[in-house]
Image (cartoon, rainbow, N blue to C red; front, side):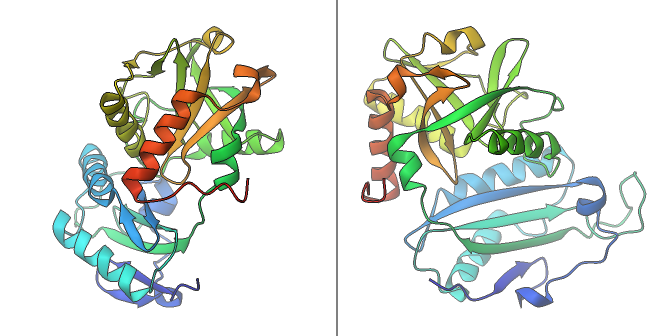
Amino acid sequence: MTLKPYVLTEKQFLPQREATYPMEERGLQFGDGVYEVARIYQGKYFLLQEHIDRLYRSAEAIRLAVPFEKEELIDKLEQLREMNDVKEDAIVYLQVTRGSFPRAHAFPVENRPNLYAYIREMPRKLREIENGVRAILTRDVRWEYCYIKSLNLLPNVLAKQEATERGAFEAIFHRDGKITEGSSSNIFLVKGGKVYTHPATERILNGITRTKVKQFCDSLHIPFIEEAFSIEDIARADEMFLTSTTSSIIPIIQVEEQLIAGGKPGEVTRKLQAAYEEAAGLAVKNENA
């Protein structure tokens, strides 16, 4: 698939090479903005409404006005998908900042937010979905408002880089001995047929896929316990998995040197993966595993 290079801005659709902003842009200089990433499977958006709803919640939390009403924005993202002739698996990235103004910490008096959205090809992580991944532990040093999907991601970037350098897929944050979430995912532990994960407080980003997993657990009669588990609980886990928009549901088979369930994905994780595949209208593909 070769995407056509069109992007959406707050004013119009443009070829990507023409979509530029001045250097004094508040997202660049302050991280003063919010963003979303939504999945496209086989040319169709998956859970787009939920992502747009969260975008507006994040924007409201930082007192930022999105330059479109929700339904208008969704219509424009559908137009963007059609203009880029999307047929396969991809993502749409959408960012809103407080705009381009001379640099000053206080909000500008004028309300001229910048918005852009683009689509990029992204195949599914089939090997990881089938076989599982390794993760490391790292201290959670982030701010208190992790529930806002803001542009302030430097601690996440550093944690992900540490994981990459150590040959792992994800870095799992912990605070006061309790697991919060991953650098770009939500983290789950399975014990005794029950799924445990950190509650959706201000300390984590309540992932869209996380929310779907909760719904899948309800429909499959799997107890879903929103309760933070500890580092020590990992050694006693029957299964672990992570979720995110770009990764869907991926088993965690090792944390640091600790193998989870002998290093193999577990039954509960497989059931949730199957539920996700069905909801997304996909078939599990193992040929690349």
